[in-house]
Image (cartoon, rainbow, N blue to C red; front, top):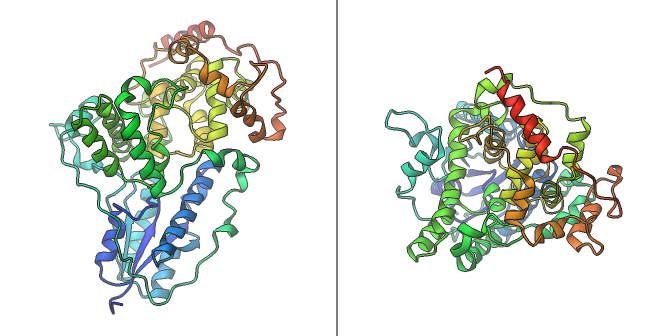
Length: 473
């Protein structure tokens, strides 16, 4: 054991031991390392499914640390107050954490750093959630990028450091501060009966994430470019869940993709582009933090979107009862699995914001409550891209046709059969499970008659184009 003062590794959305620069820097301080997770003001604001999923990730990390001879200290409260108290309790002189970029976390972290530095503590954030720090990618004019393709071109040939193996010695202290109990926080409370339905669809922890990446590289990346748009097929990596909570590092994914590219696997470049799309989302969140809560294109503030979430059309959209099969299947997939296929996300977002002319914030908030891979940057940019108010936006005149989209990407109706019970005499188990997950107050049954479209495509497209062409900006 070292005589040096302890260091605190402040655990956040970096639930891994391997390739974790914040943990590495805490170990470099030379003293014992105390891993700490705080259920703070930011995490308390999470929606039902993300908070529950993150709690499961925290629970898994705690077990992993115990197996490695360490432990995870749990505290609840404002981050600044909790960390200040822990520093006083333990005599820690160093605090390290993985850097965040969205406005809520940035505001919290600035307050924490100032308070700790005033107390004489060496407090620093460390890169690790991204491959490219947002301020390190600039145009020739020294400005940030507003369009994805030039951003991709500027970073695709950059050297990305290789991922670092998990440390063999976590240097635990001789005595530990008190810890709260995870079960006392009841992070699953808002999930109600849905938790038991969603749980089998989760892939929790660092080892599971690495196995998922390995399986994707070995079996699916070659066909990724052509198969990723087919929601009925297992054609994607599904790594968004693990990247969201830091159970795998983007560097590990990048280097696996580069190896696949060098081996001539055809879908590898597309996979790398998707990793950079995530980077681009954080690039924009850092430079224009308004993107998470307001229109990125501020002229869209004048657009007369419906913002009333109580409208019957919004309720039907949330419940997967719009009468538009692709939309309803996707919404039910999300409620049962906590995940939604990317092609489906574009369709449901387009339908809400264009056919129904509802504000993208309604959809963004619903996703914040329902997704196991919820990410503040990717979710905000995805919704604004679809609505037309964001960067690289879908042009206002492009209104996805959910009928022809299902004909193109689910020709044999595999996806629809998987999620729509009312349409079939012998519904699939997954389709029926939706009715076990939803609130009883929705009063829905697989024996119900499938509804007629609340807004047919042609009508919705015309209404959207009329509204866009008559806008005041």
